[in-house]
Image 1 (tube, rainbow, N blue to C red):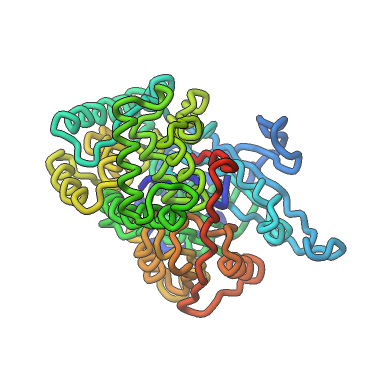
Image 2 (cartoon, helix red, strand yellow):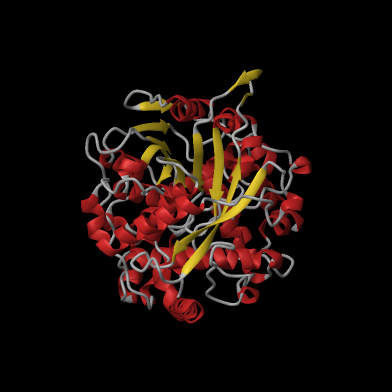
Length: 534
């Protein structure tokens, strides 16, 4: 389930006991359960030798880096091992509201920003922001690159120099010939993954990500884990809570993937495509309300016509030879994740239709220098989701389901298909999704954060996880759709998160927050280029 990097971020526990949900772990293999125990014991003994980060010249001195060794295959902990890159900023133990007051350190807060395929290595820098200073006073902020990502035994499925293929098309209702072309590309991509990764490919999946988290917890010297997972991070966080509930201290699930085994991952992607149609309408309605600034139309349908006019123009002549309909669609898809991008995207579209393509090219161009990171991120995304669960292997099923969906939700549907289609031809064995959950008393209380109109991880996922984790509390941001709430612009949401992480205090059932303020339109002559997202 594709997700961009989150608003709040740039990015375990087995030693004394294996009492946590042994039946759940048995369903994933007793050999893996024993292997996790062995790896965690070794990690506790070794610790993490933190020192200067590889990119230390660009990073504040408060952040340090190290590595943690984990088995490639938990069924064989004495076999091949891989190194996970880890980062940390020590708890400041200084009250930001009263510099003379010392704050009690509460241990490590480990974060995963999602993906699959996103790195959390820069997460400790979040403590420099005002919204995070109280948490940074009490916790060591710990980020890491999951297996396959960055320096953590990186995966690759094709030559990064060939990764960016823009300008590209983005037909909402593709022809039979176009579909067959994309099928051929999906088959080639799946073959490339197998050829480049070899037999290791099968070991990049969510269950191993959860086991890696347990080893990381042990390496940090934490008896129980405090964890924040965002987007995809909520899914393997939920796996962790199921496999190792006795090792959980506190967990925040931010923007929740639907964890139902039947939804991992094919049906979750169908649900995401359907939800993005509503979110795309939200974007257009906001642009229409500010027609005086952008001149793209006074109704959402008029804005859609402006977008389609730009797409057709780019199909005929890509902007700067680099930006075609695919790049335009991708940029507005990101705007569906983050509403603070709306002013910049609207300005670029407006300027382009008035004859100035420069803002469009600046915002939507795919930069060759980012190709290695982008290709690696996509390779991990595909490997994890393809390995995690069975997928339809007959193209006719994909074509049937998505042709129907595209009739009512054309904006993201086919783009989502092309992203995930290698899973139809995947050469590695599939895992059987774990039926996540915890009964009363099995797991400490947990906190779930979700926005009602989030399209990347639709709201029903938060409701489902809330039902599956006894003692959890769901905080809902009403009438809002930004993806990734923790540390964002909603003070109500942040207040609940702080109370939980700092005091262990949860709100009552059915807690709700009013939506954060919509972005303000930016006059075209003052608009800047939006931040790039992963």
